[in-house]
Length: 374
Image (cartoon, rainbow, N blue to C red; front, top):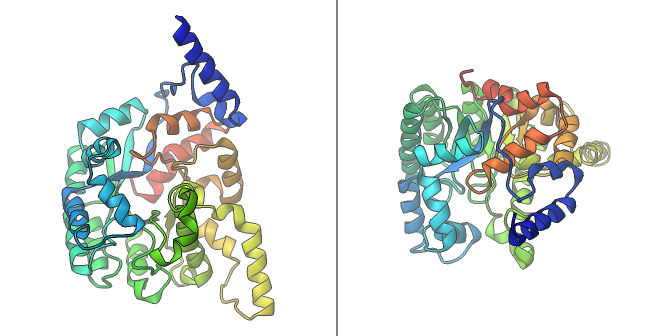
């Protein structure tokens, strides 16, 4: 090892020493993630892709909208920055290039979903058309690589008739495994009665809805703009966590008791708030007459919601969530291509948990909820 390599290794070791104990095993002396062991079937469940119809729709929107965080993100993907040159081809790749990266990260299967903000920026007619085209592209990729890919169907939540019809087509004709909703639609959330046909269809089809983050509605963004807080560092979790809390408190899980909702990023903050929201719900019920649920909100969190590890590769957080929501409600995810498959696998491989729990989160829970072949 020459002097430059020695300094690089020393620097990597020093950086690891600054990390929490649960994270120290993730990198080797040269700062690389270790090669994942082949002993596990790893199924990642929040893995993005894009289609040309979707990107063309983003391009058209950019012609007449001039502001907004969602718009900024979509136009970035269409640009010529180093980020776009790296990210957009990887999003579009549903073949050997993606599979090569999966193999390098030890990933057996990806559950694919149309990248945020999906089709929800578009008018209902456009959203329905792009969702249908994108679902067909996804289904073709799954037919070509049936052991490597599964998928979540896109639909237009803002079309109460054609949205559920596409959901039924996605499961019964295309063989997809669930549904993707990129949180709010024009500032509206799935607990609102106008969206109940979507919830009813998901329950009837026995497939989960994955609620993926998107930017806060434009009217709410002002406090988040400084310091870059509007995106993945904080704003996405605030927005998507709020969506999850609305569902927990609204009573929709009493109306649709078999409905399954999935939240990424270790539950978008909700598991850390369980004591307080149960306590405040009971206080409100006693003092302000707002109680309308058959059970405490945390009951529905454990019965009707699942969470994933996407982009939250922290062992202390994992262990806390295992205790609060239960290991049967946690799915493994990487958040590809926005985060690294290798880091996701290194994190879960190194976690000081039982092998039975590791296997449930790596594959068993996903096989059950998405109806995947074992």
